[in-house]
Image (cartoon, rainbow over all chains, first blue to last red; front, side):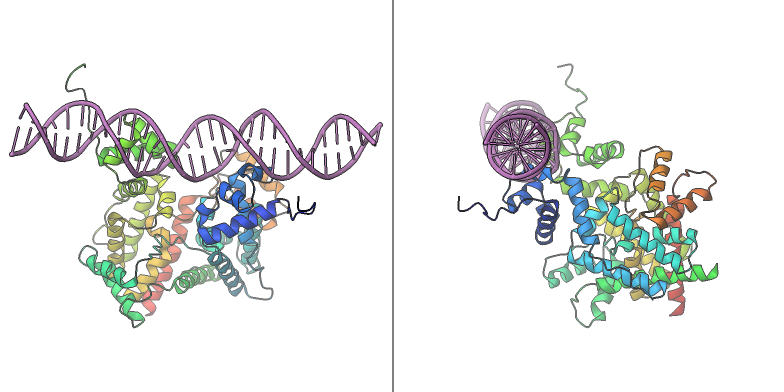
Length: 222
Length: 222
DNA sequence: CCTCTGAGTGTACGGCGTACACCATCTGGC
DNA sequence: GCCAGATGGTGTACGCCGTACACTCAGAGG
């Protein structure tokens, strides 16, 4: 009524994907339900299905948005710093979208965007002098690290205050002595009793370099 | 009516967990819904809640069943074969329960059973002469491999016939040349054109040994 | 005997993804 | 200028999920 050009931006896959990603970024992946996305767009849930086949395809699309944020390979570098930089760029993208790694784990088929990423990753190894075979094993060995994340088994993300956490650990002292010992050592390392837990970035790079160094040694040996 | 001792086995956490695991083993994790477990037990869904707090606790319990199947450490071995054997035992347990790795990924807090497993794993590194620090990094680096699985990003498990898969790959030949090249090489290795895909067990052990060898080198260096 | 407890029941709610029939608007061919 | 068809948004409804809450009913202890 107000006017014929009543800012009625029409729906589109891009708009849907964008709001889905935004919702997931702020509210976790369960905030990106069809119903909530539709509500956010001021539209009825079924309207989405005119632009997206189903929830699975939508999740794939959301992942593509994230993967598209990964920097392209920097030219002119040796294979190792090149792969390293790319993986760390992927990690940065995933840190921006904390839901993405869990969703990626749940996917069963890679999208074209992901395939393209993998393809270029393989090419980087090959250009660095890796045999086809070793490249193959390298890709498997890297596993999800290729995509910039590690399993973070039980990444508690505990919202409990850190001293409560410390208390919990001391309570476990005699049930799990080795874990407790490890906890103590980690806490003392940075001079505070309760400590900030683990430095995820350091641990990621540690494992990444462990793999890359090992692979380099195998390459040179052959 | 038939009799007072009408084989009415009473419910119990163990019985619930056992049927839940059995259902998941045969029908995937979504076959282990509260309603289906209850039906399998000839009972109404809400009856389960008298023995299990909620779905999350049930999933934890199911994982504990799997973790309990992991062999204890073999005494008298060097740290490396010992860790190796244990991880491979974990892998065997997870292969028996294909749903378990995905469920484990989704868990946010470890159960006591899992903590005990981690604790003994840490102890194995320590006994092998690893510093507390290096043990810490080692545990992070191993990630989910500690529990016997790798990310298997996009483990297609494609039920398509293998020649259809081959056809798919050739169709991708110019879009993803490096993937195609890799696919060709893997296929030829075992003498068949379509090949059985990758040898998951080999890839797992390859990556595991890569880590363990790298860690050993770091230990000896320090 | 009578009451209390605890296991199993029934009903119901709010969430999810989505099938299907419907309607409104805009477009191209006559 | 009109009418047919496509295209995009709507409304209703179904079957699944986990689970809150009020109940029944059998067995145990005083």
